[in-house]
Length: 371
Ligand code: TRP
Image 1 (cartoon, protein in one colour):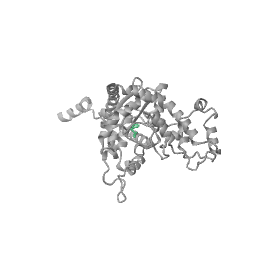
Image 2: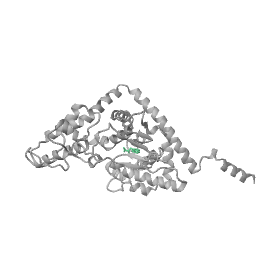
Image 3: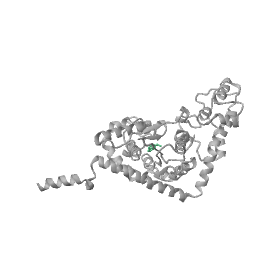
Image 4: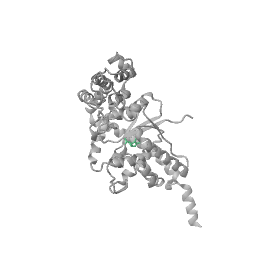
């Protein structure tokens, strides 16, 4: 029998989605969805997970659920092909996470690199204390466990996500193995599906900083207008040593070229910059000297706009009927709950905690008490 292919992934609703999300995972999801070579695809808005580190502003999470929902639909996730849902509406996920908590140690969570670095980034640590000093919410600390529940509740075996999610998938795999070794083969081991190249893996911000992030104000959003896109591209970080057009330029760390790596195809050259056959030729010219940043930026703007324009337009259409978006997600939640409930059933059977249906247990104990 061919193994079932179940795809699952999600995003925290802390802001609109940007082109880093797009090349890191969204593009893969839509491609997988449209290839149709899978049994089921689940895509969800991880609002409960977002709350684990946004308790200073839970309203932000609440407001951004619709933004992510609109971005999902705008990029082409299709509710007729994929189950689109909201994490908090699936109580089975919390239930499963609670059982998983017993098979993960505190020490293992402390070693999870994502947890470790996010704690650092968010300033929970101070110099006197360990990373897990005062102020760290238990929910945040344990979110890798909750994420394992997200994945396993749907028996997902493919998780399209960025490199930063690798430690989460590894931890999930360990949980699956541990659970199965205690209770028998029940859960499915997931595999991460990473984007195709380095540039897509970690798209830097427009300022050249390591990561696109709202707080750094260096994002190009999927919903940016053509005008905003142009302005952002034109002010992008390039090569600080490339002062005159005639100077030899550097590609390494040059954000314009990183974005081109992530987005452009030979077709784009044929359409917008026919003097070059491909990106290698453009790079070679830039490194030789004699190619200006503005020309490269104008090309990049066209390349990006070719992808973003249809997304922007579809978003506008969906924005015109917000109640119908919530309806789509309500339906998705119902379908998702059914799938998760099925797994929870199997989990409880494996754990032998289905007391009321356990005739053997009831029989055995009534005999014990008759004796
Ligand atoms: N951790 C992911 C993020 O930060 C969101 C997420 C939650 C997720 N559960 C998941 C991703 C399960 C993949 C699979 O965006």
